[in-house]
Amino acid sequence: MGDTTPATPTAPEIATVGVVGGGLMGSGITEVAARAGLDAVVVEVTQDAAEAAEKRVRDSLAKAESRGKITGQEVNEVMERIRFTTDLGLLADRDLVVEAASEREDIKLALFERIGAILEKDDAVLTSNTSSIPIVKLGAISGRADRVMGVHFFNPAPVMQLVELIPSLTTSEATLERMQTFVTKALGKQPIEATDRAGFVVNSLLVPYLLSAIRMYEAGYASAKDIDRGMVLGCGHPMGPLALSDLIGLDTIRAIGISMYDEFKEPLYSPPPLLDRMVDAGLLGKKSGHGFYAY
Image 1 (spheres, one colour):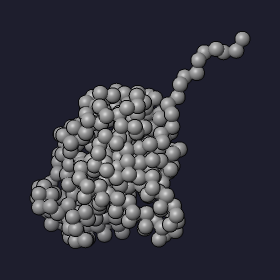
Image 2 (spheres, helix red, strand yellow):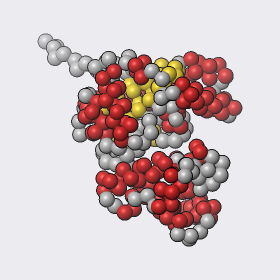
Image 3 (cartoon, helix red, strand yellow):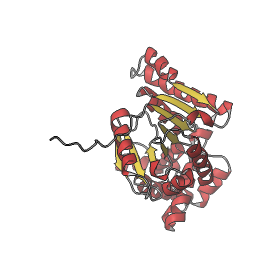
Image 4 (cartoon, helix red, strand yellow):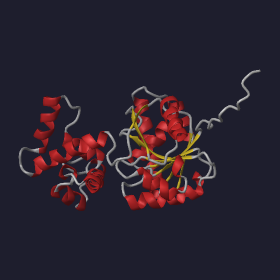
């Protein structure tokens, strides 16, 4: 007789995606999903923010079209797959939700509690694009800890191939495998797996380097331009550390540093006073028009 053991049921493919937060990262993740043929919903806090998110996606697609990466017809098809809203309730039917809100633990915890109660599908996966906040905390407050994990994209998401996958102590193996398949097959990205520790792999190496460059500038070792030129011309980096900090956002760098310092108490993770002052002054880098450089 043949094997009568019932087959292990497999989770359906992810066809619908929700993105919470339409800023630089959220809009990029949305574009990636929609260009992969997925139905996407973007939720923002205000109508103005939702319209700004839509503009970010349109501008990015227009740039891709100008470079011959996508046709005008494809741009229209991608935009037709995306809805921009302020209604968190529209996430209820999603297969996957990616939280890409501000890098503040209180905001993320509140969102995960609300979204966990909204999701209707038992196998829906709830993820965070956080750079540093513990995934296990987000899972616990969501009420669906086994279906929560970190999925960390890199900026600009439509271009960068890397995605960090971060399961917590409570994430199920099925959830991790499902996200590995989704990232590689649906999105065409390259995943690496990291443990649930602040900074994960890339930021654990990158953020101390960026903070060291800020301390160097603060101490008067060299100008911002010469620090950056030194790393570009001397080490072959595509961008200097201060220009990269401006691109990422000085408030984001500071938030990651604080989170990592709180967890490890290592001085190299502590934001230098100059970074604190710049963030307090609203000098956040490229997104505010001024950081270490003017834009």
